[in-house]
Amino acid sequence: MVALDSVIEHELKNHTRYDINLSAYATKNADAIRFVEDDTDIRPPFFHDTDRIIHSKAYTRYIDKTQAFYLCENDHLTHRVLHVQLVSKIARTIGRILWLNEDLIEAIALGHDVGHTPFGHTGERFVSAFCKENNAGCFSHNAQSFRQFHNIEKKSKGLNLCVQVLDGILCHNGEMVCQKYKNNTHKTKELVLDEYHKSLEDEEVSRKTIPMTMEGCVVRISDVIAYIGRDIEDAITVELIKRYDIPKDITDVLGNNNKDIVNYLILDIINHSYHKDSISFSPEVYEALTKLKVWNYNNIYDNPLKTTQDDKIKTMFNVVLYALLEGKLPDKIKRYYDDWLNNERSYEYIHYNKEARKVADYVSGMTDDFLMSVYSDLVIPKSFGMSFA
Image (tube, rainbow, N blue to C red):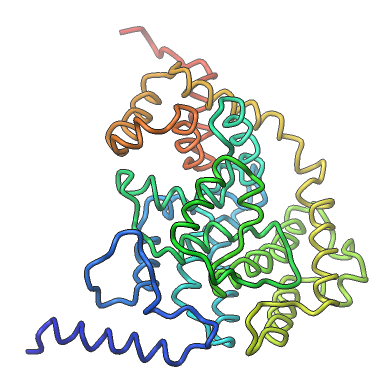
């Protein structure tokens, strides 16, 4: 029987051999940094982080968080759990050709959106406004994803993910499209932590952060590639747009369906990034992608038909957020919140966070259906049944 120590030593040598095969611009397993040093593990560090992420409570809640389309009774629309898988698949396709670290790419991709509120970016705006109104900084989903893994999971001990993974999650902002993505190789774990804390106070910080790794850059642009065409397909499914509505100057370059758009964008990146120290689009494709993103906002995300319920959603968020802040809760909801706060959070979390930030953490972790259920308990009268007995 082979001693376990020998197996671990053998596997650590395999990690080294894996590193040798990577690009000079890739992040090596040997370079993985944690805030708290771990015991030796047979799994490579970034591979291990993926396991930690998919076993987290936050990851489990992905399945009931909507992507771009909420309040639609159609089981074939993209939910957050599918979106992160699409990001992972696209990013690993690019990373494999460029000889980058696929384990790091997968960990960042699968974890990058756990900080999203119910009702996606719409809910994010309402939670951020609540934080500002109550002097608790601001709210952005990418910073919240970092926070979820670093300060909230495992009774506020965090998952102790690698700094490179947390950095990629913090810097994934897929709403900001660039022609060229160049990583900041001078980042330290102290700087990453500083950017995170500043992102909780200033929304502009989280929009401008630059990944420390090439893998983080790949995930950032893959986030855009994953949603830009998929949202078009979903919009067609719910009859919000027609395929022929997309301008010809865009479709002549990228195509008019998700398959062609994804394929063309991936190939363009690979052709313009191979053996280079940055991730880039060609000028022609970047221009078409930028136009498509603007078109999507005007015709899909901000379409008046899609936003007709947003005022009601805002009311729902405010009722729930302020009921939690002021402690005016039905018994059942009070038990849920008290259990989350007092039994699942640490002493440090409870005593060093403002009340509004705790409420934002709790509400942002809800699924769409759970938020609506809490709102219903707060505002809809309940029947007493046959008698008060």
